Length: 353
Image (cartoon, rainbow, N blue to C red; front, top):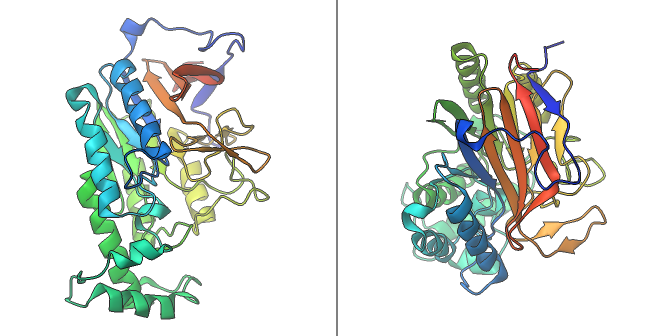
């Protein structure tokens, strides 16, 4: 069994922050984690207002932050007007807001499930010059029986072209490149994974992406064996964090077993996922595999979900502070502007116990 990398330090449930309180001046780095903002074209929509509250909160509290890590579903439909809202909101804060690094969600690049979204294809063409409305019609005819995971070479061209169009819009709007990428920030490795097919809800990771991930994790762990590695993926792995339990139904990585086995080799990984919207007070918000990585459900900025399978108005995310031997993860209620004592953890890491 792999030796544990993260060692939880007891927290005091009566406090709004962990009972272990390192001197803030000793903090090496910090970042924030948000997900599922579901921005709409309406600036007055509650989801957009929640994003503004989250950005206002981070503009005040995210001092010297490495970045705002967004775990997908930036938009509700992946429409140009929704990405325009993202830029409008960000522009209000200027340099006071940390830079945003995003991975894609199913609402950003997945199957087109909304009438208004399909209408956005009028007058647009694929990279090979085919009208996108025709591409969409072909896609709908062929997609129904597609996802038995054929080899990439056998995926219908219409499906691939549609995904490229959706991904291209996401990349342009979020200043990212491709479906997956790595950033090195403040001496730490941040890895962003994403689907490579336009599935309605789930995520498909190609063999190439998994091999790329193996190489990046190996390189990071070899270069700095005592440092955490931060990974972001929209969909959680089955039976790990809140919302991903089999009876809850919101897991969705088609290569679930393969990714789990890969991550188990690297206990330095701290994985953040979204998709489920489960509130941070839910059981299983944090999941720790025996000797393996630590995983966190990152809730949602737009709206929350409960264990009673019910909608809950709210907006939540994380502040993460890194010290030489410890990491502090604090849940934040952006709408109320308060720390969530039930979602606060401190981990010693590496050789510190």
